Every structure is written in C-alpha cells, then in structure tokens.
Image 1 (spheres, rainbow, N blue to C red):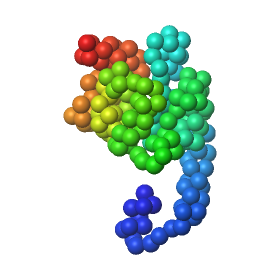
Image 2: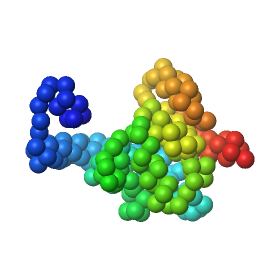
Image 3: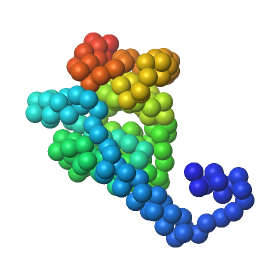
Image 4: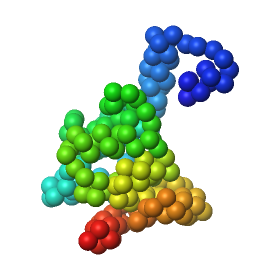
Length: 187
C-alpha cells in the first residue's frame, strides 16, 4: 500500500522508516486480534478431526504477516492444530514479499511439502485468496460463512464459482461434503 501511495503522491520513505510504520500497524492490528478474533463456527471441530485422523497435511497459507496469523491462531485456539512450520505468510515467508492474488505463497508451500497442486485443497473466503489458489492450480473450496448477509454470501459465492471454485461452503459443518465433492471431481 505504501508503495502505491509513494508512487501516486511522489514521495519516498527510507527502508527503516517504512519498516517502523509496518511494525506499528502490525502491533495495532495484533492488539485488536488478541482481543476480538473469534473462530468461525464449527471450524475448530473440523480442524480437530482432521488433525486427529491425520489423513491430510494441513497448512495455514495467508497474505497477512506471520505475527498477525499467529496472533489469530492463538486467540481462536486454533494454534494447536498447526505446527510452527505449517504456517505461511506471503508477506514474511517468501524471499520477496508479495500478496494474494499472486500464487507465489501457494507455490512456495507446495514446494516445501513436495506436493502437487492436484493433491491439495485450498479453503478461501476472499476473491484474492481464491484467485491465488486457482492460479496455483489448487482445487478450491470457497467459504462464504464469514460474510454477514445472505446477499453478500450469494454475491461472493457466485464470484468464487466464476473463478473456478468447485465447492461452496456456507458453514464448516459442510466441509466434509465439500471435500468429498472435490475428491469425486478429481477422480
């Protein structure tokens, strides 16, 4: 965002100054996350089952900074489902920081785990995240339960399907059905 502002308004920030602004912004967001973040209804039960059954490798793949991701995981109690090396940030896990819809973070995770895109499933609730997964050729479940109105859920579901999303999940209780749908499509 700062790069865009610098270009638009013709100013430059020294790297140290930029980094201090980024850290201050992260600190403020993290304070909010540590007090207000809540897990999506039903997500912890699904994560617990997936971890217990151990049939799938799991990872968190986000555009957020690693500190934000970890704060969210700890606050929501989801940290116990992901090992330290299963949490990835497009902003801080890559040699050159980027953000979704760039598929670089997904490609990085595939390479780190020695996986092919068709062996994976991404769950995304944003258009930029979904675009990154599709560009990485990873089958996609679109989650629309985080949107507060039915009209918005329908709008996002439609856009996700246009991007190539194969299954839409309105609630985490739909996860296994959506996963089975993707597995049947891939067979």
